[in-house]
Image (tube, rainbow, N blue to C red; front, side, top):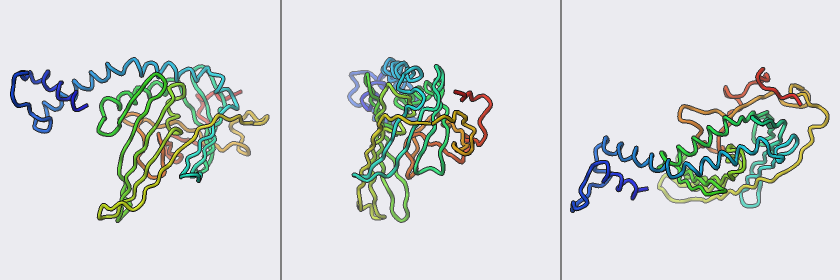
Length: 273
């Protein structure tokens, strides 16, 4: 990326290739840096466009894929060594050509919930991941090929008087819904004291395994006796879909007490079987 910025600087600023000294990026004016960043972003977007379009095409197949039929699903397990730290059951309630409803049981959540995932959400999330790939390299380290998108996210959280450094790596299969990044994560957490001395290192791994589930004969999602009445979507802020950087949160955060979750099924949600 740094090489790309330097080459772009030469083009944007019109510097002669015979010039003996080249300004460093940090010595440029904010306007010159912005011009370089804009040129680099356009070059990057052009370079990765075909790969992210392939991601959309393959991921959207989930809306017609037999692996996402009713009562199909997946089990996510996040492990610290051999110890399971979190288990999530991701059960398919209903699949159509434009949306999938999941019923999700998370042992770290306050209760089960329904999640609506639309094809339009899927495509928007992939567009946001592409944008992050090209405009936020100081935050995400990204690579994509014909089958997998990998994004590494590094951040620091205070734990007064100490602090923790996180390295989260999301490895997304292009053939799955984009939000399944939540369930394809590796994490390294390092604890430092206030003298910047490393105290502990903890490594987390995860598995995502296909499973079959049984909803029985009750096809009514509004049955309070069997299904928790929480109907959710994944929120998208002003800057798009972004990975969470909060302690004990992985992937795209679903705030069960936030505005994206309601306790009455929205009228537009056709969950009938």
